[in-house]
Length: 294
Image (cartoon, rainbow, N blue to C red; front, top):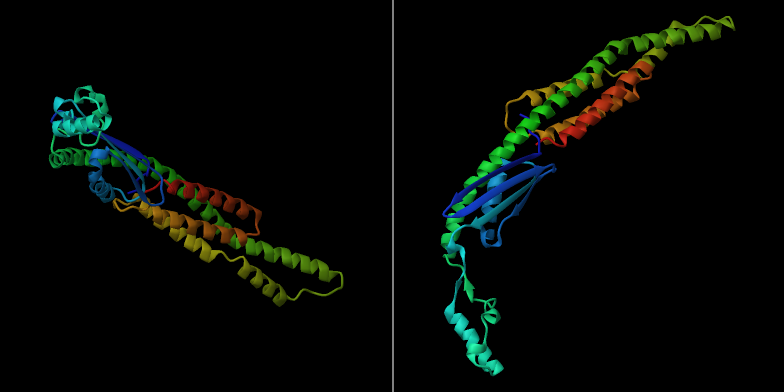
């Protein structure tokens, strides 16, 4: 099954007077790249969230954004009165002023004066239990979107493959007549030239020249390999297997182009050359499209 690398998913919930929201976006990338944006207070959860992404996605640049906001008065930080008093006394002694003249504004931002109201371990536990399921749900939504995009991508690729198959069939049909045409032209030219000196053309010489020409322009193997690649490509497009196929299709599109270039170099006939140009154009579009396939 082909999936696009472009997608978006989100999920949100409220728990213990805290709002949790998760967004996940993905765009094209040759490999899997994870970008996680999470509040500094929850930074220790980042490795766990990255592991969830890697277990669901194999390719693409994925950006995960987690936000948390509390609606509870308990979210307010508490004042460490012991630290506050100690700072005030130190400032009083250093400045030679009464403790009563030291203002709260001078103290509130000093280290240790403001502390979280809840225990750090308890807060992380609650955040982990809320955020991890949301990440999984957002990823499911993103993958569903990537799958829908994959259907359109599959249809587009199938159209290009059908065009290549049709043009390749026309080339295969005309390949034999190209050699026959060359043989007729060669014989006519030799007879015309030798008639001027009253000598008959040697059939064996004509046969030898035609054989050399046929060897140089033989594209039977290239047609066979290109046809096999097309079959393989279509099998992947129509497969229900969930394994990523983007890289395989990228490699296969290069093989398609390799065979098409060889056919083009061996095709002296103008009509065959035009058909080959159409094939190469379709392959170029395939190469562009598979860059978006997971």
